Length: 358
Ligand code: F6P
Image (cartoon, rainbow, N blue to C red):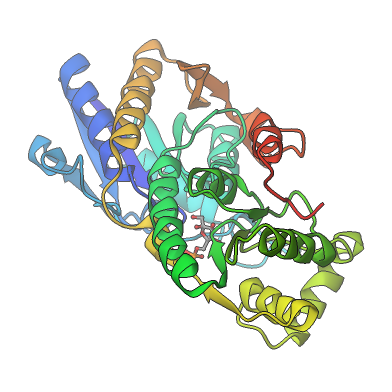
């Protein structure tokens, strides 16, 4: 008898259930003597021992279901380790205790960047761990794609498409603010797919003068509307020179709910043209996974079971050049995959006249 634990941690996204199903179905198929334990609400369930023994039926009918049947929560990495003064509960010890108490042989952990740091910590402390990369941000190092990303690109593109028609009718400038605090992948791909005229992402600080010039050039060409795809973490060139602390203090002083509204105000002041702002927010990570994410989640889930079969623990299952590959957790942990300013997609967008504000 083998016992495998499953948990989903961090912000949810499309494809989590499809991946859980992929893991479970492959386990029942290839290692039928396996018991699966599902932990509630991410690492919280492993800390408190809140788990259920799952049955094959629990994984039926969830391929297309958004969210996660296990629940999730954010458990920042810094809260996992004891303070220097040795204060606070030792959460790592608590998680190891649950793991041992249930007699688990391995954990399969689904999550993004923070989740991978903690998974690596558990590995260092002797837990057998395999992870799967999820997030609409697509910023997990070591994999070309994370599941959730392609579904979010579909949704964000649909938002841009619908804004396009109203922007054209009213000859307006529209800002569509998309998710992505650190990484601009979602804004970049949805921006290109939705035909945005300006794409602003955290990795490429923007100059207001460049954005204004693009809007005015379009008007001079008889195009009286403009679409700006803006990542929520975009910064301007002056902010790029500030420390994170200074930038946070500056933003706190500004009275805008988010960067999109600030940019709208700046554009109004600089061009006299009124801008409208659309923020789809968490809508981008809800609902069913797109077919491409269903396929990816299933491949990664089955890939996790291959690693368990081979006893190859301490890895994330990634996809690189369309091949499912193990990626050592110590390489993944604490590393973000950001958009390089010379990324081929950025170059492609620039070659068709998209302005990145640089
Ligand atoms: O899942 C990643 C992400 O969507 C980021 O792009 C976003 O900024 C963040 O999560 C917000 O999520 P939450 O409200 O759950 O903290």
